[in-house]
Image (spheres, rainbow, N blue to C red):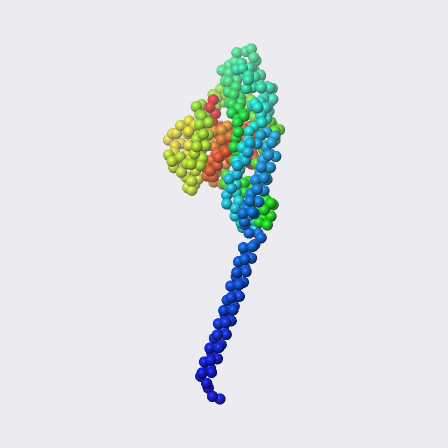
Length: 396
């Protein structure tokens, strides 16, 4: 058998050309399939598009508006809604985003006596009205409440009881009267989620000050009867405290009597999102909540000293602020119903958190805070019923 180099070379060339053609054909097939796959992905029915996003947001806004209309209609006239939405994202078959909802509303009550809290308070005392009472009638109401003879000259301690009672009632009525006829803006932070294939099937979840999930029903307004009962219970508690501790009343509450709670609240409104450059910011360094509340309280008139001053532990630590204020006699622990704008609230949850109460209209209570930055964020029912302790700085 003879060997022919030229024939072998031709065979190698032909074989090489065949392999190249095969590879080229295979590559073309892969490219075609890749293009087809790209086309399929682009036409994926569950992919996010503007129509899906718009449908999701429209459904969510309708559901949110319906929730608050149903919740608040007995006590409020709804003025309007505003939505500040985050970017919509998709993950694990769900589409979701967060929104800050501002609910603008006005109390239906035309006078403080029509408010359920005040109605319960006055009924417990046997008074049909208070705001229009003459000073002498208020004193008679106080004497009657404490079983004091109207015609007998009071001792100094008894007179202090009467005076403190009247001052307390005046402050309570004044606190609520400022909201009559005025529109308040309450904010809620809500997470919206839905299956990508069903953007109408949404779930609403509240977000608390730590951005933890909260059942949306935690923001449902308390009923008229519940608020009325709060007023009656607070009236009972106020009377009992004065009767049980006359010495406490005789010296009065050693709160700071020149505290301007509105100035504290207005400071919070001014610097809730744009931090005051005159102070160190602790955002990202343990949190700025206590630093912010201390600034607010100081703006309201509470003086600094060697212990409580900017950058001190008592100033910047959440748990230290209420301890200092109570020990100094500036603040008194109270129920949330008595926490006026300019009061503060503390929770030991997590690393601890402190906020400034900025609205209390007798039906809803809201706070303004740093870290996380919030303005007039409504407290949830869990916040009001144990999560937070409330402290008031009285100016009488």
